[in-house]
Length: 266
Image (cartoon, rainbow, N blue to C red; front, side, top):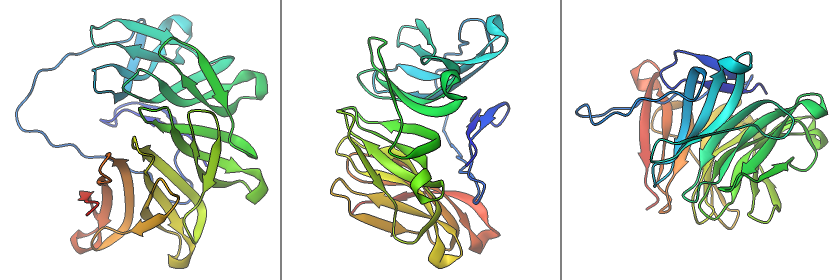
């Protein structure tokens, strides 16, 4: 497993964490009309990469701090345009990925006090950090998504299973549930958790030549695997509270063109 970070426009790659056994997900956005733009840079930024916005308009992401030798640091920009810059404890880099409605942020950072091991974190709205490693984690633990009650989903390398990349849910009290879909090969990658605890993502299916397939794991631990129509790979990237999933897939009927989908829960 390698770690990734990219500009959504694909202009600047900050650092990459993509699976070595399968293609990384890409996202295509379509809008009608220009809308109202607010352009911003984090303080002293050589480059700014927002990754998540909550319902109140608070944004989190990373930036390259020119005042600190282009160190990758985290930020929260509130709805009024005020910036809070932060680093996780002992961080060589800090990578915030998701912010919930209360302003809590999850992501990953490289811990210089542990040989630059990549670890997960939650930073609460008051700036307090909880650093975490999934059970038997070696190399990395990453928080990809945090819901409004403080549950986090992400992935980690499990030393007890040959460093296989596995999924987890860490609840608001710090308790871990580790999971894989049936026939998961080298990786399980959960990307989104909704407020009731349903998770979506993708995995490599060993029964289908390590084909990347989508999944939903519901709040009770029941996993449903899915493929978009005519897909050669499918990634679930976000799930709402009703269980509807959006993501992307390669469409074999259109020369493996990458396309978007919505999978309804009902």
